[in-house]
Length: 298
Image: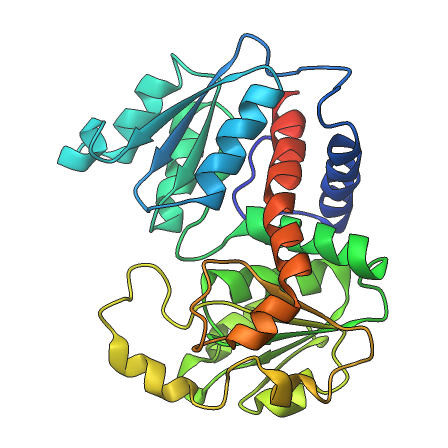
């Protein structure tokens, strides 16, 4: 594996291998036997704001012996219109790897091609692979794995989170039900490309949550959509709350990648009831991303 650009590009073996490594790194935190990033500098190029992603990558790089260099769009010439391929060819001669959090997936793809150094997608409009790996690690810890489990995603059916979840289901074979308003469901051409009979789409959130072992949600308005307030009205009835969870499987867990807007996609009561799992999920960003860094450091 030379880059981590998407869940779509990973095989089942690569996903499970990263999760196994993450579990070991989590157990060994504070006393790692090796520091594979010693002597390396990794650039973090963020054109989108971040809490969990930035902190977990900076801490992870340092714990593996490396040095993180944070670069916002205002710090470098990308913010003044320099082509991504030119920035990539410069940084590729100076740093050892790059982590990019931006809007266009193609920017991450182009950077990986022109830089010649390991490149990690830390979130684009198309995918959020680091988050899905952390979520899968959490499911593994809380439920023993995803085999034979039903996972429901309630919310925007064609966001970076749901796209990554659908590819994860395709690769790993678990049942995934995405519940979204009709206008926010995956288009037919994407579903044809996905070609995953274990992934189903519905406009009924109660039906999606029925018998589910994992109920996952995210903000209704993704980063960059904050001005589309009228879109929120379409999600009436899609809040993850006690009523929706009443039909879920016994021992179910609730996931939220954060930040959460309590009273919108999830109720205050539900978030606090499942806070232990949700913040374990947040912590697992650190361990999953360290596994990615170790793999790409070679």
